[in-house]
Image (cartoon, rainbow, N blue to C red; front, side, top):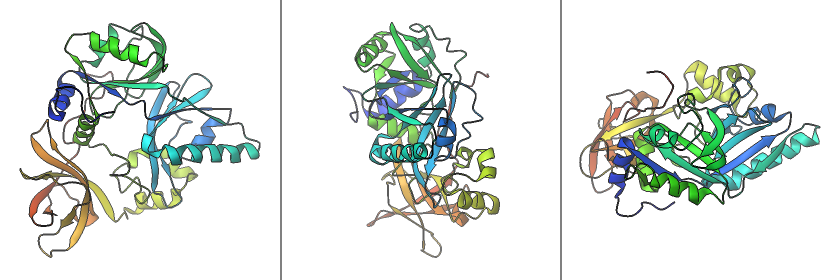
Length: 355
């Protein structure tokens, strides 16, 4: 995916997505089917999700954790009404995620368990995001989008292309879907989407995608979350399912649940609002203005096209994480004030079917 397309700037593309609808080619992400009668127990042994408790054709955001409670990767798990789970994991983590899945599946089979990993090599994945998504897509699909709510999935025809898996989710904070499509039909699907609702549907690149997800307060793996950060420290306690907090049967469970029960996490992910001018970026240190000590660091930042202000995500000492707390971002030659604010920076509009 390029940084941007055509004559649209990152700012223009971001605003277009917030007002209309944009297409993102995210085919680089890893799509996987997990089959076998032990597939649910298998994926639960590696993640914090309650897949057993999911209804058919619904899913959840979850995380792979390591033995220290750190996040190996974040992923989407969909429990289909067929004989497989559908996973979408990050492109940047393919080299560790796929071997991790394959090695653990082999270990399970060696114990007589029934589980298999099937990667959907080269299958297209197109994200259609924005408030006009449903209007655009409904004209070309046999799926009733009014019944397909957030984190639900189904299979149908989209603009004449059969066998598309449509999941109501996304990485922008807006209403949207991700369409998994036969690789030989992906370009055709994009062309037909772009031709619908003339002028309302535009291609968007990595630049707009990053600005949109940051405005929505969503994490980028490798920047905002990593193997040294627990879900609790990252503000992702909701991905640790209630039942799994009791069963304690996933990697790092004891540390994660201890942090939850004792409220003992040392750092916390927060949103920052910065002054006009230079925008805080990844790795910049944050300084307590009173004692001049380092109290955290920036992990992501950008000028927000929607707000017209500089925003950032950071980790700070828990004692400095309260909304309204002010401290200093150190650019090296210069310093500038920042303030802790609530995330998301821009309200989200996920479709739940409720008005």
